[in-house]
Image 1 (cartoon, rainbow, N blue to C red):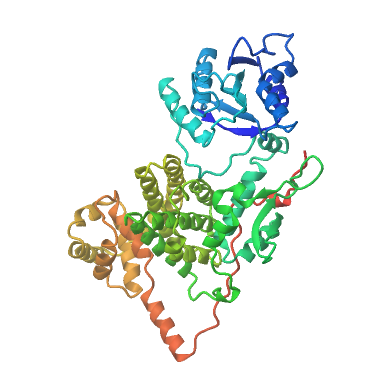
Image 2 (image 1 turned 30 degrees about the vertical axis):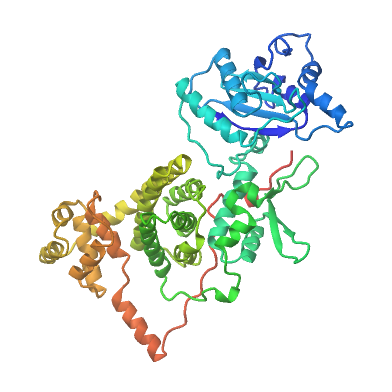
Length: 567
């Protein structure tokens, strides 16, 4: 059951909407199911003689009295509006049950406490099977305004109780950190234009993807503009510094042809200019890396940083953990942008899903996650996708997403835990799609039996507690190929197994050989490192590679080139 509180100043206008046909003729049998006084609330839906103006006058009675006392000045935002909708799949409530819902919500929110004879006037209108609209005028009979502080949260809490009592689907409670949902008008506009998402949602995804890739505030605005997005900044009167900004989607205009602007904080709490600066502290172009020593380094560095983030979630430092979750979401956007292949769609979906898990009421310590954020940004400049190493990175993201879901669940962050679980499912599907043929190929290229027996001895010596499970794992054969490759790259297999086997407890792993396989894949080539070190020391290093520039945002790229029509 979902309530959505808002305020306005046009009593009659809202009544016209509630009892009218709706924007797409979706309203049927509009009628009042509950009111401050059923006898005193005329119902245009049941009595043809009742006009909208008459009902508005009854509701505005105390407002008009207060207006006269104020010398003709109406109290601001005196219309309170709260649609309440059941979840998809729920049974349809009766009028009597909806009346009970309305009375409970106006009591919980302070609009009309039970037994308060001087409370605000209100009505509850039903014009569809699955929801009602509660409308009130927020001036009491004694001329005072009601105490509606945190009314949205109180309505949410009451809905959780009603769900249990009416045996409805239990929804997750919020904590005021979720981005704003699109309005009905925004959704209708998107439908008219044949768009799958509203302008607000599309802009939000573009902003997150760009913020994940760039290193400076200036680049953030530049890349957004390159995507066809209009950018408007607000400057401080004294310093001339940017103190806020707004974005408008290409072709998205209002009734008079002007761009429809959305402030950064209106897109999402952490897209405000101040929150962005916490994640983009480096403003110096000169600090950017000018070359990449090894094209595989961005993938390897990000994998290592994600493994470290897993440890932070267990550290007890909630602020640092929240900072790493925000950086992990940036990493997911960049991984999706730098990935090729059909599983890329799952990675995009994972990044978008994890956006709800990236923030909570816990204030993030972004400085604690600098290493993960910097490593992830390297992927925005990566020149290629190094096969097995990219899958090793995917494998790490799967485990961190599952750990994030548990971390949020332990702290009562219901919506965030659900979002992290959704991201986990997308990542797991993407990993399975990418890893299955690679593991099969590794198994086909397994070394000779004598070499495999030697590696078996190495496993028993390095990881005696886990040896039987590792050798019984269906991916053991693939691991022998990876161990042979590591040995060729200059590693001692027994020493390497001991090292990667202690990075994380293997007891809970369903396939410990698979875990070891990707950990070993992520290790650097020692022979290549040694050769590069000798070359640098002798001054004969070759010209470094130049990065390609930041990755393209992962959201739908078709929209910037497809102007959005006006109303």
